[in-house]
Image (tube, rainbow, N blue to C red):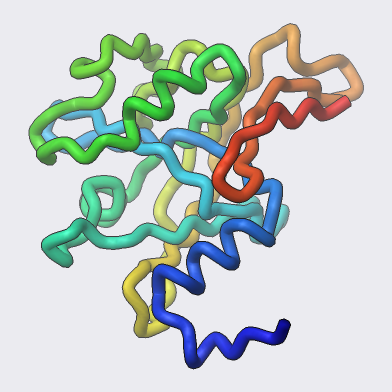
Length: 187
């Protein structure tokens, strides 16, 4: 079967892409605005370059067509902390997929522990084995319903037991495999 993307609606294109471009890492994007910590799960992101160290995340709109809180916060504060999900915090991650009002914090609503690692960035999810501390670089206007956002990684936290002296990393990250999740262990 050959599918012509011009003949598919947005939802069908998303379903086909998200079920075939796998595995995709799952992470919270943690942002802050006016003291409210937003922690939203994302699986539509990928590394872009190692010099400069950048990644790209595609952020959709709310049902009312307004920007999702993550995008609004990133554009306002120019900061985000990306916290990788693992098998131990997958249930908390799923809870955060529920849409809440902008002034309601997912970390407070669902009692998710966070730790402030760097003063100038939003906190990280404490149970994450790694977090990327990112600054806004730019957006790309593709003319669609999502906004691709390029973030530059300024610093990274990795739990000591997950990295060795040769900088080999072993984490229990969870990835999206179509509509399901799977542990992706890197050795």
